Length: 195
Image (cartoon, rainbow, N blue to C red):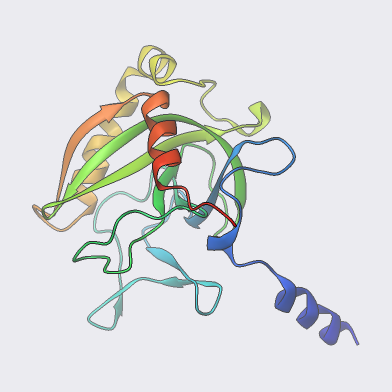
């Protein structure tokens, strides 16, 4: 009976990519964690199975050949970037949450604090930088790009170096950094409107 109940709960579970962009109760931005901070194993959400699976290249799980993720990597649900050669059907807006390691599948209310734009082999990819909305979950007590740069001036350089070194050689270039207002504008531009 317990197995049947567990199966019903899993069967009724919402698809992570279809969750609302903003939480219903508090109207805060949500991020779905794919790859926890502190790991070298790259995980991605598979919408077909509604599960988090290792990213593979040539049939082998992809590992970051550098320092582990300095933040929780994930995506903003119910968003979609334009189609591109790397992502022919588009992809959800990527996000990095500066927080302690959170398991894959965690849905977290966050505050956007910035936006970094990457050039991945000729394709521009915006990535939202965020901190948990709950102060008790923050490892950095900041809520804006200005505060992050003033209180933790090395954080931007740490993230820049990690983004460059964690990719294949020459695959990624950091184009620019913007503030939380620009991040919010980007989110609204790619948010999928529900009918």
